Image 1: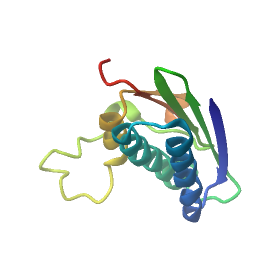
Image 2: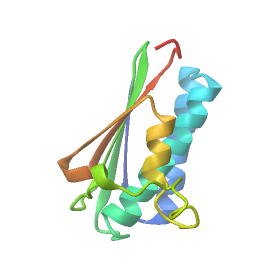
Image 3: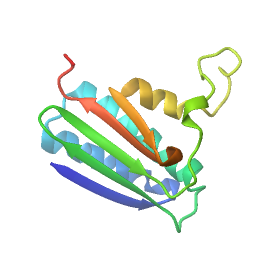
Length: 135
């Protein structure tokens, strides 16, 4: 099963991503724990792509692809921005960063997904969610 979503880079379009994840949960009978992780990670990825990748430019798009098989759910997110240095992000759990309002999105995405990969200088992210947690 595959679902594609393309949105313009406006914060109010986050509800479209939320609705797509909700539809996957209902139609594919995804485990509630996987659903929770998927929802938070997908919303973080969407917010990062809109805000940081595309700089809230409504002329730029964010493309999502949700691909589900019997073992895993793959989510890819692609923005039109220049990317970022995903290998050298500050640790948001460090005492020096604990009060920062920003910098938790990628951390949450990496903790909630079972696997995360970045490509195209960080403007493309792939997250995997195993449907059976014995992986």
